[in-house]
Every structure is written in structure tokens, then in C-alpha cells.
Length: 250
Ligand code: IPE
Ligand code: IPE
Ligand code: MG
Image (tube, rainbow, N blue to C red; front, side, top):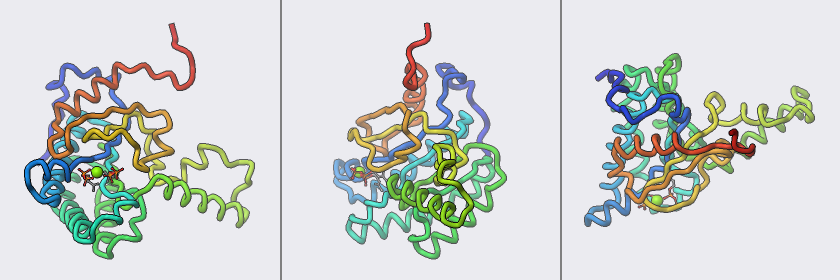
């Protein structure tokens, strides 16, 4: 289904004050399931439905970039059965959703150590990225086997290799050069980080990119996070005063 632009349906939104890049820590699937007496896996299934809903809203709003945290480098510590289930769900999600994303001009990109995922997922990731590489709509990044510290270390290694082989002078290394080696290199910095489910921490997500991000937390567990609440976060963002270290302009 091709989504039409329905920005007019959201009169509360001032397009001029929308964040360019929104990042979401989709947390609370397990707690949502526990509260209902369900298995954690049911929470993850419900979480995928929320993701579809929020991506649709991002497409409707013509957001520039949306990055979601699907699996962290620390999530391998979970029981094997849960990790396997999450990987299966990820693979199924990509297979089922990629054509509709493509129809909606979404450009998908993956962040993190994809090379450590299964050969099947690696090929699905490559196929999806290739399919949508020329799309010009929402830049939709999925962080899978992602850790902000790991990403920074990988970028540092790439830069060190360039210095060692004479491609780059040490004195030329600056924030821009560093940024270009990150997994998010063609996205603007993160403007807004949303975390569901009540915990107020970063959990190793986009440490570099969110240097000046605004943070928005909600008690709502991810499976129950609605488009309306997402829009509320965007509207609240529009009311924040961002100073970037400067003083308030009068
Ligand atoms: C988020 O929900 C999904 C992943 C981290 C993969 P959780 O599984 O962390 O749910 P809670 O935090 O235990 O409720
Ligand atoms: C962060 O959630 C990772 C993802 C949402 C994929 P976690 O549930 O893993 O974070 P912690 O363990 O509560 O910090
Ligand atoms: Mg959690």
C-alpha cells in the first residue's frame, strides 16, 4: 500500500519545527508481555507492529531520517531462545515489509556489526539496501547488533588504517572526517531521541550522533506506543529551545 502524504491531518505540527532526525530506543516489549501474562516473545511480535505504525507515520510526515534500535551489542547476553526469536523476527520483518517500504520511497540502511549476523540476514540486509538505494524518502536506519562504542572504535580503526597507508594526515582528522566513517554517515545529527518504557538511559545508542539531541521519555511500553504519542513527542520537541552552547537569542 502506498501511503499518501497526510500532513494536513496533523494541524498541531509546525513543519518548520519538526526534527530532521529522530532516533528511537524501542524498549519495554518484555514488560508489556509480562504484565499481560504473556511470553516475552509475544511482546517482541507486538513491538514489530508498533514499528510498522511508527514508520508509516514517519513516511506520512516526510521525516528526513528515523533510526531505531532493534538489537544492541549487549543483547547477546539474553537467553539463546530469546536471541534466536529476535533474529527470526528481524528476518521475517525484512522479508515481509521491504516491498511496501520500497513503494513508499523509504531508503533503508543498517547500522552495526551486520557481518556477525547469520548469512541469511546478511543477504537480506544487502538485498533490502540495494533495492531501496536510490529512494529519496525517509532514511530509515535499523540498528542491529549495534553499539555506539563499537561503532566509534570501528571508525577509529578505519581512520588509523588510512593514516598508516598514507591516505590521510593525522592533523586533518576532525569531527567531519570522523563522522564520515560512522555507520550513519549520510544522515544529519540526531535531533530527538525517544525512549519508551520509563528507563532514562542511553544504553550505548548513537553516542556520537546524539551529542546535541533532545531526549523524550515515556512510561508507555513500546508495543503500546501510538502514532499520537509519537506526534506528541515531535510537537514537544518543537517547543524546546536548542542553544548548542550559545546564549539565547533575543
Ligand atoms: C526491547 O524490549 C526489545 C529489545 C531490546 C530487543 P525489551 O526486550 O528490552 O523489553 P523489556 O525492557 O525487558 O521490557
Ligand atoms: C536497549 O534496550 C536496546 C534496544 C532497544 C534494542 P535494552 O532493554 O537492551 O537496554 P537496557 O539493558 O535496559 O539498558
Ligand atoms: Mg529493555
